Length: 169
Image (cartoon, rainbow, N blue to C red; front, side, top):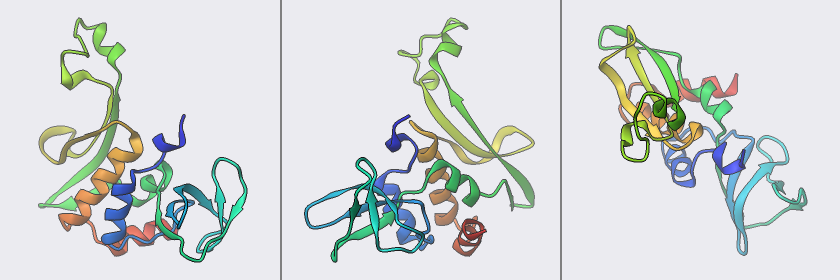
């Protein structure tokens, strides 16, 4: 699996930073005078970075970073249960695979509902009615989890302090 499929997009990373989510991720997107990409931190809260491809240390005075959260980190940040609207909603996530639907006589190339993608929602009693997140979709698991986290924060369904506390545990 490619690294880009295991982390959120740069745009999602920047939005989470704007929402004041703690920037404590193992990986970061970085921009420097002559380079940009994804790299790992030399240690949490460290200004030293390691090229993901070559493993060579890279230090720069003008480096700017934003956390490139992984699927696992997002799993920690997202609550399993939401208590809102007088009900409890449980996080569910699933992966559509075209081959599953071909067996049922559906054409995944013609029916967008059955294309390969990740979906996520919070549901009350596993019923679609009244769900939170409206079956968000994305091509990767990391992207769909980030989309849900952004939605929860922007909708004030989860407080950033709760997210940051879970991330630090």
